Length: 496
Image 1 (cartoon, rainbow, N blue to C red):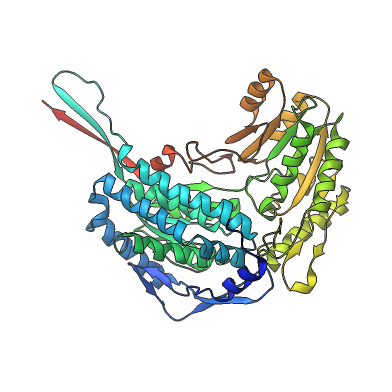
Image 2: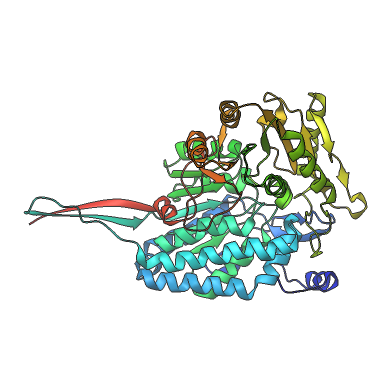
């Protein structure tokens, strides 16, 4: 990001004009007068009172999206024209990049360097990529008998409800919104109540970029009311959700209880990261393992929270990670020197601390961290935490913690490593470190995960799909495959 000093960023943050209203039908909409408070986890201060959607506001947003789909220009535009508008969204995100990064840091605690350099880069690239893809999608004409012509066309599915979490508020919103818009759908986006501000800014930016009214609507509110209303709404054709497995189950029930809308789920994870003794660079493997679990305060569905390391190198690798954890700079998210910011809020911090307490009680060995820090700030900060001596049956090894807490499990042979890796209800991602090509292929195939990184972690770009197996969900974000979630296949058979 631009070389800005901490003091300059603090001044810029004070001058932010943060939104407070829903964005419906191309304009800000105050709603029915109820509001909720957005509190910054960096210091516990109130950022904004934001409109709290009830069913009436959700109905208003869905009706706008339905009109825009049924009779508006968006689904009927040439794909190249839709693509040009998505490219303009990307341009405006770039123009407002610093403001958006500051907003994200304030609302969910992400370090400003990560918000600017990683989160906004991903959001901008997503809109740019799907803008470029929009006119490159093709239909099919299968070979049939000489007296018939068969056409298989992809048509936009309709109104999409997109419900996204707080840990990557713009990246994950973009992963849903951009392909849905490229396909010709209209969208009602509900961000987390912890991070609604950046999504509201996205709604304004999309309208400024030229999206017709009703094509992208943003409603803010909590899951049990606003999220439920979207899930149950009979005029929502597709529901795309990223969040916890428990909430994903609710959306499946909402679909069953309403119009059997298609539901695409990207859910939790308890990702294994396997380090074999023949890893090409053990120091790099340890450094990457530390970065992976502490990046974004560990608030990552793909976080490599289970480190499976061969017993012959376990202590060496663990010591390196512990040293990195102790050196990691935890601090104000608006300080460019900060490496790990605040957890999203007090309630979440308490849940993470409960997991840590349980880990101690169950007999795991706490190597470092495990306690709050920077308590004088009023913020929600936790020291990077490492446990070893973790048993596969412990909560530390089974449940998604969604915080900067690493569980180290040792193994003695490759078969045991694969068994441990797959011994989870989740199947989102996995890592593997080895110099043996055959081992890399065999283990990657054996791991029940939607993404396997070999000798790296969290790498990739928009050309590859992202999603999980088992209780980590279904469907895929990113890549051309994401378009499949937002289109319907239609067969037209013409007798000649």
